[in-house]
Length: 74
Image 1 (cartoon, rainbow, N blue to C red):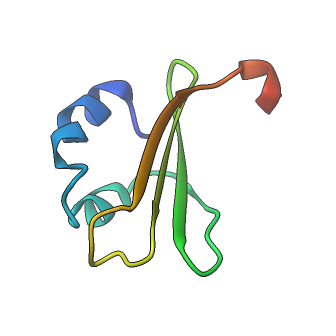
Image 2 (image 1 turned 135 degrees about the vertical axis):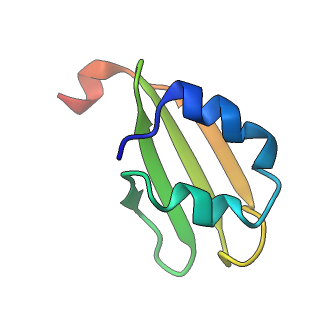
């Protein structure tokens, strides 16, 4: 299941909660972590969400939403 902008807007207020990990786990993502949790989600309209943390039972340490260049992923 792909993460959409509208879904992201609904959950944005929960980013400070440890439950964000459980909620986002069902969406397509790449697990980039090695020693930490680092998940990257590609979102419609050329955005990506990156969420990083040491422990999924606690809030994320870092969350980034960035506009990406489509050419980069061709």
